[in-house]
Length: 484
Image (cartoon, rainbow, N blue to C red; front, side, top):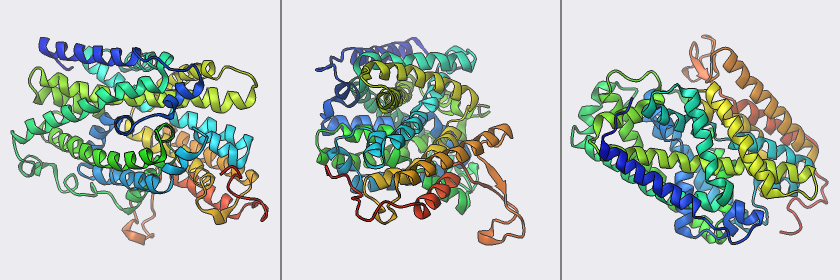
């Protein structure tokens, strides 16, 4: 357990009070769904950057877990792919997303491929958005303070995730993100400076081995490629999309993503450096790798600064959890119920969706108690099914021109196969879905090794085959909506 001195509790209490004050003081200018979900599409550049950076980097305890597996390779596996796809998003998606009238991915899918596909996309976006990883991380932090078992801590985390959103929607999350953004950089900068004063990296990390100190983390080409493709999550992430759609104007969304990439690079350096020092100083290592950062903070920092570090972790996770709960809830209220039931209160049903999202998140977090596995397996199953249809809906890969029936078939089959593959991995205690390559297969030197296939590649391959070779739209039919 983590031990806090009175000064730590004071710092922590001030931080929680600040979070609550920012979240509950929101007053929406209008009662409509656009104000609740998109803050009136009025986010300025500073607010856009702070909410995008902190929300998209909400998996901070997962970075500690990843460093325990891959060492410096964490930057290659969980950093570089997201820089690359964020840049692609800025160049090819950002302005289109902001200029469009639609504020969610399912709305866009419906506009281009019809109502049925909009509902299908809404269901998958709901599953992608449920904040299971964030509930698990906040539950783990609560456990580190209290010593309770993990399940009640995860349930408590889920309740925390709902309190801000019920009243203030996205604007409440944005205001909380400002404080979270500041604390995440201050907290990890404090930790890095404290460790640099102890020993330089070359000396401290020397005993961790060559694999941990290599840029690949000891991984072969297939896992690297799979993790890189997983970075395409950026292109269909509902929280990312929602913030881009909520920017003040298209130029703000474009510039904001470029600025955010720089901040993500900086924070990757801070967090991975912290993780490497933790690996070299914690003895023994915790059985639960999600506790690496909390226990290392307890070991390495004095009173007061320890709480600053913990506030940086908690604020980042909480901001992301609130954001993903909102988009997942909106998938129920706006993207599914509104298409199946006329004249309903979208805000009311979105709030019901918030509750459903947190229930699913709690169940998932208790069953898959690994942030990396939740990203890699659960997220990959949705991404593989939706990546190509979403890209097509914004005018990319125009030559494919699938009709709505092809899109429906690809989404359903890709999702079913990916989730069935995930279920098989859980049933066989193989969460990373490793397969054994026969020794006779000498391609790329993989013969006789275990290779992680994940859920993304099977779904993406199935989706690509169906959409590339399935029935097409009529040649005289415009691919892009006439309104554009």
